[in-house]
Length: 431
Image (cartoon, one colour):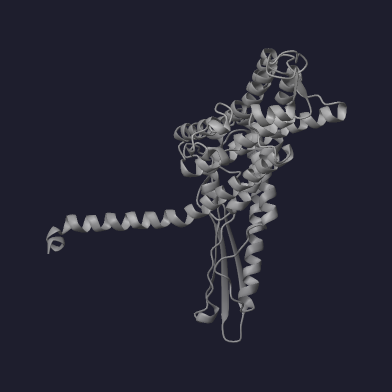
């Protein structure tokens, strides 16, 4: 990174004409390397002479920078470097012309120029950069996609064709187990991208301190850039697991498509929720190893309180049912998938338990203890609302940290200074 320092000093002794400003033009395509010997120094001197009524004033413009070590990786990169230098000099000359005109006209030069892009441009650039980083980092989504496909084939072979072989009562439990695995353990693996996100958070914190963009632009760009990859991860493994097991197909092709889209949407929004939770964990705990442990613990508690391993009416009231059962997203994922699979169908009843067939609504209400006061689309709407809530919480935590961390550092510095004074002069503290 090159830092240009541009200074304009009016040589006249009159204070009214004294102007001095400093700005920086940064080029991230260069790099410094102390071991390289191809050191270049670039200096540009521009001298203008203007005549006033009383005296002859000379204004000197200097553009110089410290020694720039350019990494000699290849001859092609050196040629590109040589081509970039005139552009930098032209940019510097442009700033000089603007400021010199302001000096000559007697205008006040602002202390700090706001040259940041607008909010939409920031979101666009950050989205493209984050998308490229996710594409290049094999551990972010590509490795997860490969593992998801392998697990989807495992689910499809273990529960193969249970949707069409509904001749016994055990197929009800098999469907519930398969859906539970999709909504809990497949989404649980979304914490695998936590180390890559921690590195992205470090870049964000450094650039945020430099004032390049805000927290809201980062949160929006990270969400938008991850959507295509999450759609890919949810559609391909979801299709493999859904059609191999032969889940709800509906009465026609349109109904079959609707049931599958709902199934993939639940998987998509659950993974987005887990990533949102891990963003909050990364903000609080920057260490990726401790962050993975804490994130896995949170997911484990939510899975236990989701209403599958222990039915809702059997959950203990303190903590597990109030509030965990009502705030965990697994509750709405389980119930949405169960409604998508069992509603509108009938199954063989347990032998000797009444009628030979039992409809899906009765199963949902009595066997799975699902809340039937609203449809399955309300469940997925609640899940998307949770995504927005967690993203807003991430934004609030980041903004709060920006206010609190400097105060904590100042408090610690004040305590350390006080302790040093006590050590240097213990008699004053005792008196």
